[in-house]
Length: 399
Image (cartoon, rainbow, N blue to C red; front, side, top):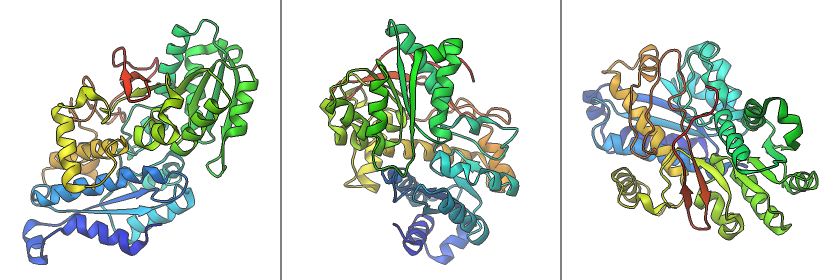
């Protein structure tokens, strides 16, 4: 577990790299940004998200900051534990006096603090979770998501299943929280009255479980010929291995939050998941289509300078980079006014913004009544080496 001292040191390094107090005074007040990430615990692989965000802010500071204002990025470990998230977020708001929260990771963890942050009117920006509830601008006016919602993703999968499987018998494995529950809900949106007939079994797991082998066995025994998995990387890799070991051959559909090559597919055994279907919104660093892509060349140059030795097959680093590019755009739009009200106003004012590491055709647009920056995804199939995209960037059947 990363301790408070080391995290604050990391934050100060991001906020004051190479600068004296005199230089900071001349540059104007710092912009203090709070974040929580699971650097330990069952979702520790997602710590790459927070590390890439810290590195990107370090780069921005090296370039002079935002309009002369340096960024102090404080990222604390919550271990993917909601009670710990509450503790760390309260520390960030009440002790560290951050200006806003950015890219706090995890559906259960963000769910534990969203009411508190909205009551305190602290911007809760580009949360690193696709739960559909972040789009509820009436209930959570100070919270905004980033990626397409999990429910939209599930709708896309359901449409694909209906198109490609003659007599689908669907088994769904999902994490027992708002993240996982969005997937059966999205499938139901598409199947409607046929849901109970086509979905032969659902099974859930807790993040404290040691394995999901028994749940996978239940779904196979139920006669499923389609397996939809909504799991974080640890349990997704377990599922891939167990499905292979028991020689079960369903149409395997996997949430995009567990499709990282370096984090899931390779550890699970790349040959064990050939044919798995997922979706993408990021440019996959393993896809040869992006070898000479300007956006990915920029990402690789950033990684080489600011994160040397990191796993370039792990798309989590692309995710953190993409979120931070978006956050920096918002700060640039602030025009020097970093009050919470103006930061939120600018986060709700993205217009046709292009992030160079997102798939072509995806543009970010937000407003006070639209807290979903983008809604599109593209289907992809694992071939043992990389994800092969197919079809167009598409959206679900509901917003």
